Length: 339
Image (cartoon, rainbow, N blue to C red):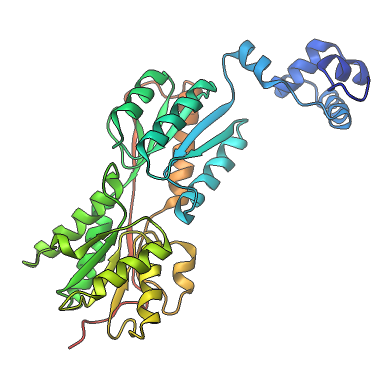
């Protein structure tokens, strides 16, 4: 075989002393090939550097063995955890993830979805149910199984958490320890049903005690640590100053913590700060962050299982719904309200 040519199925068959049909079967259905034969074929394929042609296999099988995933951002430990578990599950079953992000931009989400569909993915995984009409149209025309994460509609399979309850738990805890003036730093609410539900949960917890969440106490920011600092700076300029701040994502709460400390404000003695997500670093801050645990890794595992069941034909009925619990995690960034 000339060095400049890619090894082919014929090359593997010739070098391994097997028929082309046997080599093809070893690549696509290894469980049907005798172990010794399979080992010999794989050894030759590895030595030659042979890689199966996915396009040809897709034409023959009608499957690309790829799954499209669109997340709002890759700059998030919560989404990274979910993607890691998905990758592990799909790889174990012969599928490869194609991942795209849209940075909370509606046009970018539509373009990402359209490109994944054009690549012939076997299924799609998306975050949330609320999106621009153009993106909804792409999903409707895709004709592949779809799984929604965090929030979802009854049109498709979904793995959700109660984002409203997450916001409620964070605010309820602060109210219970005496806080009446609570500020909120949240992500942008347009087309973001997860952040909207968390803010509404906070509002419901306050209203239960006759308190209100004024629009001026809600500061929308990108979901980054630096944006959390900016949001905290704005809230601290209010008079009277909030005695507690909730970041509706841990990155925002962490930014608020850094900003408060940078201004010489003692956390939690002078200002309590709570988050939502329970990212890994939250437990290792000083003070450690009070937060609401969102089981991000389990979301990825369950989403992969649902989609694999659809692709195998094991599930053919109505859309499935798996709801995962959220739990309050009290640490050291919160304390009773001053005075």
